[in-house]
Amino acid sequence: MRRTELDPLIFRWKKTTRALKLHEQPYGKYITDILERRTDAELARFSDPVEAAAFFCLLDLVRRSWPPGAFPVGNPAGIPGQSTLVPGYSGP
Image (cartoon, rainbow, N blue to C red; front, side, top):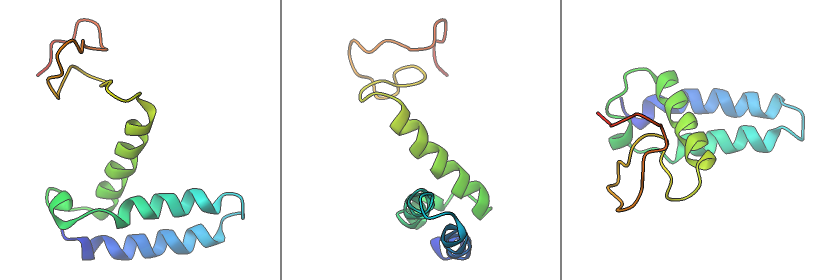
């Protein structure tokens, strides 16, 4: 999938954002901003624009939910002393 295939979805979501209540509009703009930052390389594994949009919005949510340096599963970055946050999980 290319970035240009995501553009119609971003456009629709921007129109939907304008229809939200005034105090909710910044949240809608934040979501469309997340999608506008995606590149063709990041979208290459997706064929469905909605799936790509959901993935990158959820990725942003998870990244903001975890404290810096903590990982939800295992130690994918290989940081010494970083233990798993899921008891009993040894990784893939």
